[in-house]
Image 1: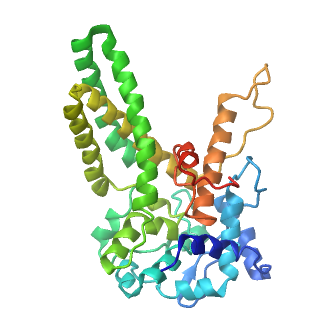
Image 2: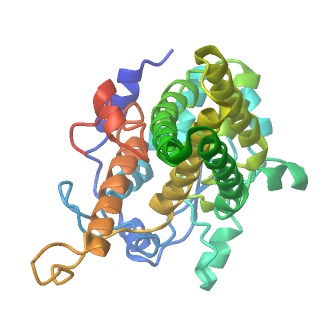
Length: 358
């Protein structure tokens, strides 16, 4: 069994990797390609083209968090033990069937040795087209493979209307029962639902998505739910949660809120407004998660200020996104036992899992 401390120390102990060879430096500079090692293709596709450039650790400007991605890429490309770990699974073949051969310890080491890929639909160069041919495949079945891939816009398109209709029904019912107090009650319930989602997001990510697994079924399930994201953190086809597995979780939230309403004798309309808040919180989380992985976010230009020398909303948003990205990249490439919150990093501070350097 590999302890959580060993996971974290295992990465930092490899932080001082040997200098890159000329070939690998060319890869970082934008002229590299796939290379084959121990039966596995790892991407040395132009890292700068994917927004992976060296930045200062303390910086909040352009490319915030990219230093962690680049450090991981450099370290893993140089570390032979990482190649040996990745050799356990041939990524030219469907991955999920091969996971049966891994023990729990092997799986944890393998899944936390990230492989850089690029799957941006906007990539049109010939080199990127070759790279897209090498993207990981999970299943032999085309149907099962398609279920694991979800365009980001499916999440807001599917769940936002449900949340808004539920919220509208709640406001109407509360206004009927409480008059002018109905809308304020709905707003407070909505905000409460968002706050509940922030805590639920943290709990699910930390205790469900990062649970230690050992059986074959548990390993495959974990990989499909979250492990694949840590193995291929830049695979934009799998950055948001597919509707099929999300539906039972959404229904569980709705049922839980209604159950609490029955126990507390609160109106169902209050429970529904809370549910709408949690559902909108989830939509915001998944869209933010996609944005953090698929785009770079600068700190904003010093000229993007108002006449009163106050940062403009756009500049503030860029700095905030840069901070979120830096924190989340630390979770992926520095210590996966920290920074579980994405849409609200303050939850990590409350539970003591905020990385000290982010």
